Image (cartoon, rainbow, N blue to C red; front, side, top):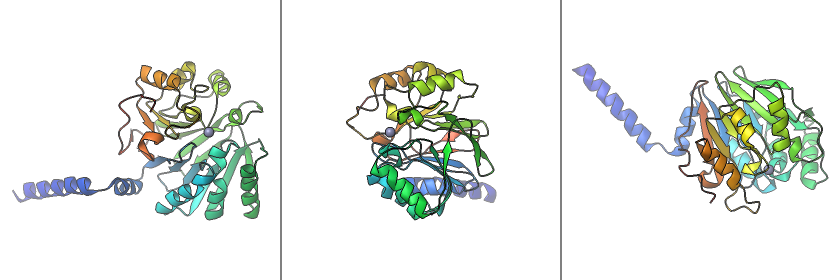
Length: 292
Ligand SMILES: [Zn+2]
């Protein structure tokens, strides 16, 4: 009888605790639980994705534009992060690398990867200067590079596979694998890169797809989507942005294959947790594939 009462009381306290926890507290709770967490930080029209491995190693892919660098820094500070073990600037466009100088100035950085592509903008020069001031080497990355994030997460760079001139086509595409689950971060990779990856020997099938180029119609071809075969898609963009992202074409395609969709423009920061075998979030995917 006593035992039954104890079980009931324990269950009640768990339910009460879950009900009173804020979204942020739930996230903090899960961060201490040996999970991989993947944070799609809402940086409006741009990308910034943070991975925290089960053994607390960190990887940041992009840091939004110049105006959102501080938001990314604040986000990392809230999680008490002191060091970015792997920093990636996918390509030189300002909506991806604009906030990187701010991140470099505020945190210890382990290894820094960028594609071998320069750009004649102050934003790009700011990243070079911040790196130089910190004696941080920029490693030129391309497809075929492998590294690990802590003991559990294996990462590969799948693209670019050729030398391209256009910034988006130089986007580093990163696949991160944790046991049976995988995440594909595509930067602003375009149709040409998708064709390269489809034709390659890489296993591009991934559980989670960060949809290329903010959902633009120039990325996410049907052939690519069928090959990646994601269980979940995530789009990072600003609501009512001037580029008209995400495109109707991409949304229609995601709807056609019933792929649950998260969007930073509609849902703010999105955090996915993974124990290596399943993926979950405290937010539900969108129920509609409407543009706005
Ligand atoms: Zn972009």
